[in-house]
Length: 454
Image 1 (cartoon, rainbow, N blue to C red):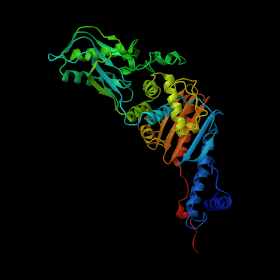
Image 2 (cartoon, rainbow, N blue to C red):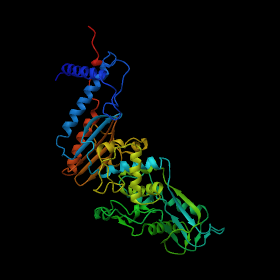
Image 3 (cartoon, rainbow, N blue to C red):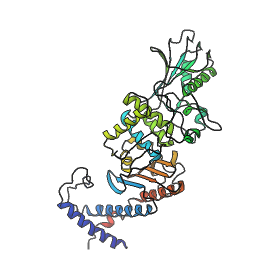
Image 4 (cartoon, rainbow, N blue to C red):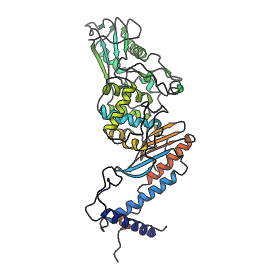
């Protein structure tokens, strides 16, 4: 169709829609029309018509393009696209689907809502008595976990796929103790993980998730994601708190501190003095690391911390209750949301596209999303693609599942596909949808739509 014919057809449609809008009563709250702008000037004034016509053409092209991109998508597909809260495209918006790692968006939303973006988590070193004048701690030195998932040594950080810019260097704890005069411990370094329960993994996870190092053991005190070995393959520590105590023992001994006993595990005694404290990056940065790297261990540990802060228990169940509460309080449509973990590894998780896109609101969450072709899990995606550098989104992938939720300014979207025939097929669908979103708004400029004077 020629541009003039398209414009004429759009004007006819626009005229009919405008007449309807002029006559109708105000839309009830919650309806799809209630969020539309109510202009003070006549909707078909010379001043407004070109802009509205351009928008109408752009949105029509968006719908046609997305329909085409989804032509080969299975029935178990949902897609919601919004612009400033107004829905431009919707397919199966409330269908509950396996969202894979897009669950991390809901976890991040709750963490920011309940803990706040600036809160930090503390790992403390305590002892029954303070350091003596001659630098001695008489008895055991307790390292007490505070739920920081990013305690890492430099050698471990160097092995990670995405070079970590957000972590809590564990060496700083040893450096601070030495700076405060510690020279000798007559007992042992003892790990205290009592802040959380001792369940390491979700029972319904596939066994290979732990065996292949996709997620570390959950604990309030973990160093290096709880892996006792990480070269040539990851091997989880059987006792994360003892492993952490052992790491601190090594770091202190390498700095000249004499430690009498072997690492152990126990709860620190009541009234123990805090000798040193290591603070994590703020929650907004912990969330960014979780989203950028799709870090399953970070997601699960922070979920337990959420449970501890909100429900008084450092458990997965308490954390999930806090996520549901945060979604409900923010009026995120959560009727189709069923969660069994905080990372999205479990295939029992369900979420709708309308819930996922509605949870994109907090600015720190959006800032933490990977950028296509540049960062995190999208570093190698959408290169030489219209969405490169523009699309920010959380990826999600399990067997038969492909998910992508994020933004291509000015559009927010959530796209989840189940029963897809392999990773390549899922990525092809995402590439197609991403290309259509990146071309929006594709329409003649308003000045070409303006009435011509004779």
